[in-house]
Length: 231
Image 1 (spheres, rainbow, N blue to C red):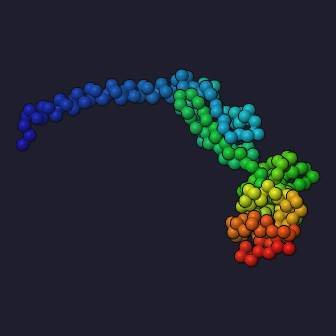
Image 2: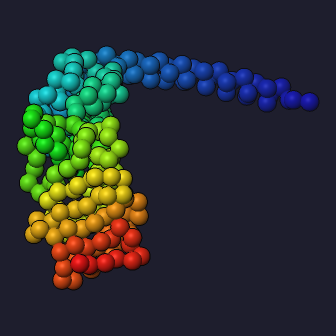
Image 3: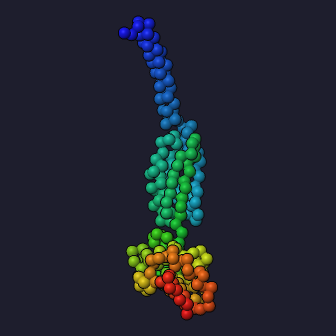
């Protein structure tokens, strides 16, 4: 049996809680509305990181940041999707940095191979994506194959090879020649040739090729990494 005094305490406590909670809730709602609509939280700064050679003006245009309104109302996912349409961009992330900054982090594509055509040099990134036609950066190897392009199986195989080359070898490679799925070779800048074979076992081939290149010779065969040869 509940005592009358205890019941009065419970009712009084609930009443006091309601009297306190309602104004607090109203205050929270008011502050949230102010933050959502207030120009005090408008975007005042845009920080773009990792753009490299991509013009920042182009990125800002695609962001389409409103001149007025709260930073809380901007659609960062839609902004990132628009910026990601730039072919030279591999990935992008747009974040709010309260109270008034939008931070844009970009991962630009970098070429691992290029191939020549009448239009110029076509750059291919590590995913085999052809993303630009412009002069290739110094040190990027040229791809030589019958039908180069992102949809070509031999091109994709050559990209896989270029992607796993150890840095000490990568800087020495002048051309990557793909004549067949198991006929991929590297021509070094000093005239030596590395017979790579297929794109399979890339890590094992990368591990044995550098020690092999210390030996005298002109043709270095790592197509079978368990049985390498030098001629």
